[in-house]
Image 1 (cartoon, rainbow, N blue to C red):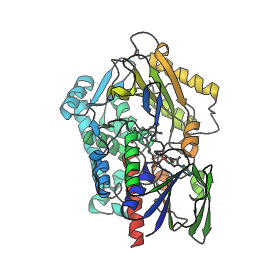
Image 2: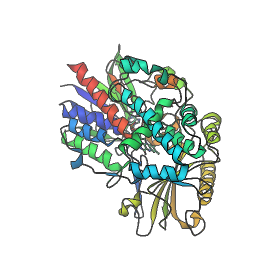
Image 3: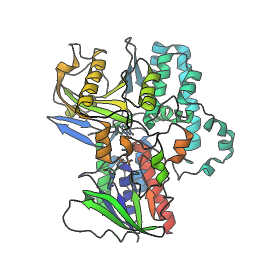
Image 4: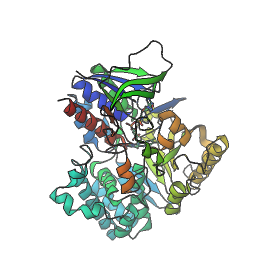
Length: 491
Ligand SMILES: Cc1cc2nc3c(=O)[nH]c(=O)nc-3n(C[C@H](O)[C@H](O)[C@H](O)COP(=O)(O)OP(=O)(O)OC[C@H]3O[C@@H](n4cnc5c(N)ncnc54)[C@H](O)[C@@H]3O)c2cc1C
C-alpha cells in the first residue's frame, strides 16, 4: 500500500489522513506546531476556556457523512447542539435582532424588527441562495473543482447568475429596503474572508446554509472536532510527528522525492520514501505555483481578544455582532486602504452561555474578533498599534452598554491579544490571511491552488485555502475530496 505524508495537522490534513488510513494507506502527519488542529485551537487560563478559531459550526451532515465514510458514528466522538439563536445582532441605535434557528420564531422576529414585507424578502433571498446550493452541492462542494461539472442543463440555464458580476451587496440591495437587514445579510461574505461589496452573489449560499441547516455548537468546545479526528487517526494507526516544519523538497522530473524538515525533535525519520505528499498549507513558494504569491487580494485576517470578564452579560447571546455605522467604509478600510477599521464591527462569542464550565461561576469568556486587513506595507502591528487598537475596540464595545455597570475595562480580569502577525506565524498562513486568496472576484477564486498540484504529479493540497474553500465543514470536504482523488489515482 502507498505511503502518504500529510504536512500540517489542520482540519483538512486530519480529514484526509482519516480517510486514507481507514482505507489501508500508511499515513504519517508532520506538523510544525506542538499540537494538532491548526486554526481550530483552544486557550485556557484561570478557569476560563476559549475556542480561539472557529466558534460556529454549520452543515452538520458533513460531519456525520464523513465519520460514516470512515466506518464510524460521529455521535460516538462528538455531540452537536443546535443553537436557538444563531446570532444576536446589535446596532448603535439600540435595534437588536435575534436570528432564531426555528423558522416560526425567525419569521416573527423579522416581522417585528424589519416589517412584514422585509420578512417575505428575507425568505425569497434564501430561496435564491438555495438555487446556488442545489447547483453546487455535488458539483462543487462534493467533488474536485472543474467548470465542466456545471455543464448540466440546470447549470447552463443558471450560468448567467454565476458570472453576472452582481456582488452580495448588490443582491442585498435588490432584495431589501432596510439598510440594517442589508448589513446583516452582507456580513455572510466575511465567512469567506471577503468583502460583500465585491464577493459574487453566489455566496448567498452561506446564509442559505446557515438558516436552512442550522447553527451548532460542539459539546465540550469546538476543539472537540479536531480531537475526534485525531482519535480516528489513532485508531487507524496514523503516525504523528510534531515540531516538524516542511522547509523544502527534493524533486526529480515532476515528482517530489524527498521532504526537508526543520525540526527540534530528537532522532531521525526517513522522509524520502513517501509516494504521495498532501500539503495542508499553501504558503510555500516551492510547492505552489509562483504567480500565486504575486496576487494582492488575500482574504482578511483577524484581530482577536480573549477577555476573561468578571460578570455575566444578560444582553449577550452565545454569538453576537455589534455592527459598525458605515459598513461600506469599514470594508474599504480593510480591503482597499488595508488598515484596521476605525469604525469596526465587533463579533463576540460567549461559549459559556452553552457550556457553563468554560468560565468560573458568575463570569463570562468573551472571544472578541474584528476583521482586519491581511499583512501589508501600509500598516504594522507592534506593541503600540496592538494596544491602541484593543483600546478602540473596547471603546466601541462600551458604546453598546453591555455591562450595565460602566466600562467593560473595569470588568476584565485578563485580556490576551492575537494580531494578524500572530496568525501568520502560528499557522504559516499567507500574509496572516484566514482563507488564503480572497473570494472577492471570480478571478481570485479561479487562482486558488487546486487540490492536485499543477507542478508535481504526487502532490495534493487540502484545507481552507484550496477547493472547496474555508470554514470547518468545507475543510472536512476538502480532505475527503483529496483522499478520493488519491484513492482513484491508485486504482
Ligand atoms: C479567528 C478565526 C475564526 C474562525 N471562525 C470560524 C467559524 O466560526 N466557523 C468555521 O467553520 N470556520 C471558522 N474559521 C475558519 C476555520 O478555522 C478554517 O477554515 C479551518 O480550521 C482551516 O483548516 P485547514 O485545513 O485549512 O488548516 P489550518 O488550520 O490552516 O492548518 C494548517 C496546519 O498546517 C501547519 N503547517 C503550516 N505550515 C507548515 C509547514 N511548513 N510544515 C508543517 N506544518 C505546517 C500549521 O501549523 C497548521 O497546523 C475561523 C478561523 C479563524 C482563524
